[in-house]
Amino acid sequence: MTYTQILDEIFGLFNQGVINNSVTAIGYVPNIYWDGVQSLDAIDQTKITLDIVNNVISDNIETIGHVNERLFKLVGYIRIDINCPITLNQSLYTGRKLIDVIINIYKGVTTNSGIWFRGIKINENIDYDVVKKISILIDYECSQTA
Image (cartoon, rainbow, N blue to C red; front, side):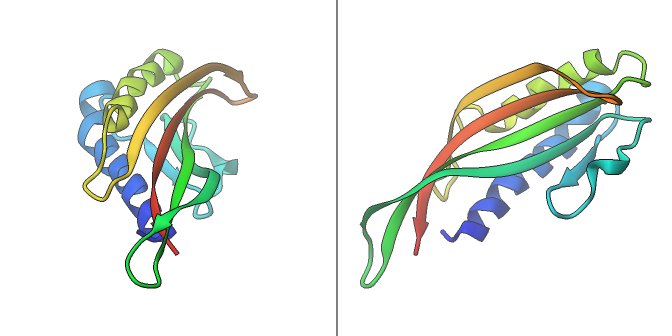
């Protein structure tokens, strides 16, 4: 898989999981902000918003694949922020319901193309001026072709 294909698969799982399951959890689909596409400067204060960012930790040679193809072990994590506006009644309580939605998208999952999601960390102690932010970090690893 190429780096772009890896991101497409990771972000596609996120998008599908949030759209399919958030209405049951919180009553609506939150706005999703994609890194490099929309600006978080103008967060909608009327509902919870999500943003997702990819981070690569290491990209080391794993083995030699087919003829003239090197395989690299890509290790990284995605950070998903649940932005809970302080002006929205019970937004932190509602945002916590989305934690389960997001965890269930990735927990223990290995995709058909070999992306393995493993460790999950939650940080809900970050306060900002206009939102309370819950951050979910999900570790993954996979093979990437050169």
